[in-house]
Image 1 (cartoon, rainbow, N blue to C red):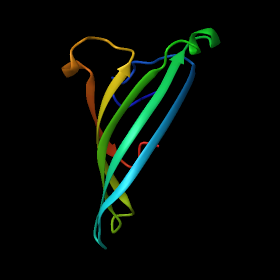
Image 2 (image 1 turned 45 degrees about the vertical axis):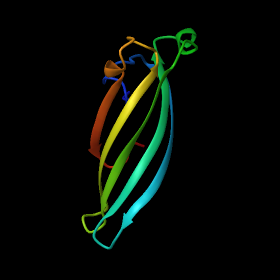
Image 3 (image 1 turned 30 degrees about the vertical axis):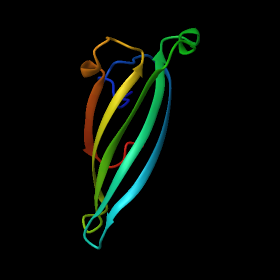
Image 4 (image 1 turned 90 degrees about the horizontal axis):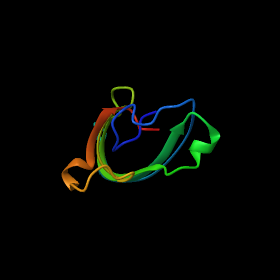
Length: 107
């Protein structure tokens, strides 16, 4: 599965769990477009056995934006910046963040 802040495929296995919490703040609201700021925390893990699922999960947090165009069947473009805090790969803050973008909502 994919979790913001981590490279795709970082967690692999046929058993998994994932949680997500977002707080969305409408910044601009017009007939043509809606702009929202987003703050989020993601957590999850994937493994090949139940015993492995109890190990340390991946945790990331971040912020982003949503551009919603109601006139185009509620199209949503999103851009998020996420920092991961577990598991630590390095001691360099520059390597501990990722950009995620796409269409529609993350969940």
